[in-house]
Picture 1 (cartoon, rainbow, N blue to C red):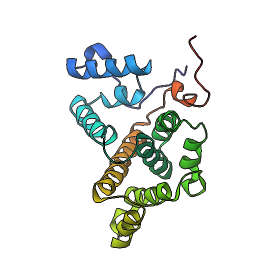
Picture 2 (cartoon, rainbow, N blue to C red):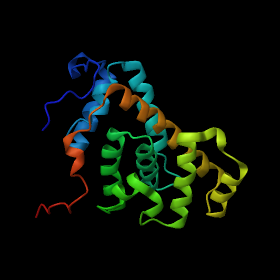
Picture 3 (cartoon, rainbow, N blue to C red):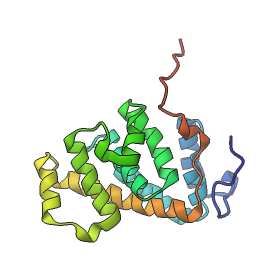
Length: 196
């Protein structure tokens, strides 16, 4: 594993964090098997870290509408557009797992227009890209295109909100020189070994 720093800003030790934040991070560690560096890097400012992950969870764990894989496609494609190494690597791993496809995340990160996705998903990513990089240019026709592909207004909100939130995340990751965990690079690329 890399010994390089995970952020250009000081990274607190877990035992220095407020109890609620430490408990949240330890729960993630128990589920994932490691602590994603984003938690440690953003914990530099605990109040902002809490707000960030509360909004993240509200968007990414929402039960209705978009699938988990579609939500991650938005993150990966817009993060690729914003040149965010951390989010492409980390959320690419999550996308590979949710989609059960070891190739999809790389395709979506580089050029979703050539990825093996549906026309509906392509329309979703075109809209997300516009929100992430040039939201002032949104027009009614952009919304109509999504409606033609079966997205309702709540889905459209989700697509836009995820793209907008991760535009913030991309910029914070680049600002802090946030380093992806080495563990993310291999996740979802090979079938899991059977424990039998």
